[in-house]
Length: 273
Ligand code: GRG
Image (cartoon, rainbow, N blue to C red; front, side, top):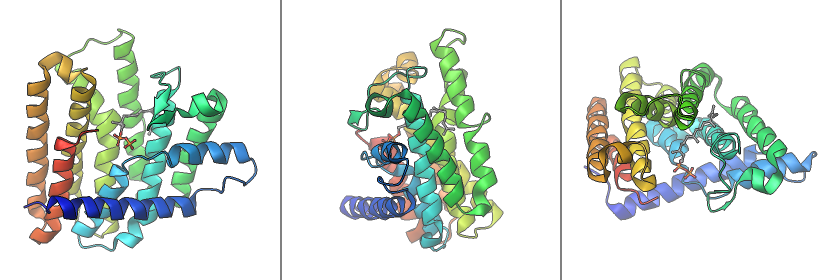
């Protein structure tokens, strides 16, 4: 059972506001020397992202019976890592995008040099503030066997060095996008002190919704799976992943604890941006 839409929207609003307050407290002030780098970091962090990944961390922690206050800094760290990946993804050497989150991309506003550095600083700051217990698993999720691996293969595909097949796209999606979403759920469970079975189930839930998240992005952009299968089949595949992800929630004893994670899964399937 999902939360009523109004309650869910309220939940999302409140949790993302908590993340914003934490980010504001953790990020260096704009007037701290050297100002330009701190302004550039804040420019991208406070550009109006959905905060989906940190909200997942908080929600998973709560669903596993934990105190999400103890996961808040790690949740903010995950948003820093996500924002760093967006800044670098927009660079001319990567996707070469002029706009992000409804405003000029970081390198268009501050130059490529500062965009590279502010991404680097967001990554460093994330590791400074996250809970020491989850450092290794987050590092692994974003490295060459995770987000960077997915991005590397995506670049090879764009250069025509890889052939577009179903399994190649699955690799890209589950690594480039899915790995950070999955680890957001895993660390929520770890910081709640959940058993290893529950931690694994929350990770699988995150993998399912992470994969679906990118399939839906393909539908928006008309590329990858949408190109290979057409919009209808791509949407159907995303819904299958969402259903599989929800099955993992059966391990949670209390049905009230499952509701919010079910609603977050549906948010992925039916979102409009
Ligand atoms: C090691 C994290 C890391 C990055 C370096 C550049 C790079 C390697 C990877 C690119 C990863 C990337 C940009 C994946 C796309 C993920 C995605 C679907 C982004 C959009 O997420 P939303 O819709 O955006 O949640 P908002 O703006 O709402 O946060």
